[in-house]
Image (cartoon, one colour):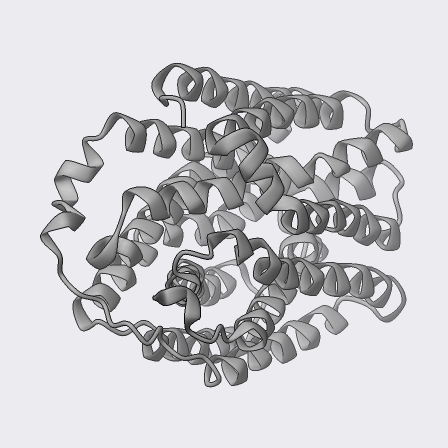
Length: 383
């Protein structure tokens, strides 16, 4: 029945485009902004980890509220407006403690939006989950446009350009949130959904969450220090933008072909391949930064370490958390992976960066991905 309901393709796609446009502006360049304020590596790691800290509890909190109320879109609209309001604080101060407060407030509201929009999208898709990638790719397009454009804007106009572009993107997210609609079929409580604790005790769910934790922890150093790492080794800010963009362009190709990949390989094998390629990617970044073409090849692996990984993880979460547990399930995935895992990876990288050096820090992240691969391989049953 759900397959005959009209899909609000462009409304969902537009929101994803603006949302990840912000991510494309913030994640690669905010660390450079913080470095321009003369913050040290540990201070930068602490500030950037605030987003991961918020993801460890905020998505679950707002997801619980959404499932309890039975509506997600009004909460998304509130979170988008609150994020915009919190961000305005960056124009009123730039001390460490002031930015700590501003980024903590921003991260608390912002980090909960993605799992809710994922639940809204999957609710609209119903049994057409193979079309998820075709909607989500617009987020990747927004990321690419923002990261490449800002690479040149920051290089030629200075860091203030970054602050104003982020403000405009957050405004666009808030405006586009008012075009969203909840799925026509309201959330209902079915006994077949199973109890929350029974789902969490399933072997497959524990394997999934452990693998997601390991993958996000492995990315901690990448999202915190990758841009700084490249600039310190002579790459221009424009080139940094292109390298981030290259990774996401490859991610777009994965989203386009995700239905075929799901059918050919299944979710388990896609997750395993993504984790294994994360090990390769971070090892290469750590030891081959002087070889530009190897760094470019490593960036193409973003197609696996985020693209195929995220699509498979969202699909698996949707498989195990049904009905009344959908928002809480997507919130739990975000909390354990990007929240707890991302926080651990970012904070530890802040210590390691100046103590053991960048190369060994990236090596440690590669080993973290390998641990996730081994655990998932033995714990997750075949599709």
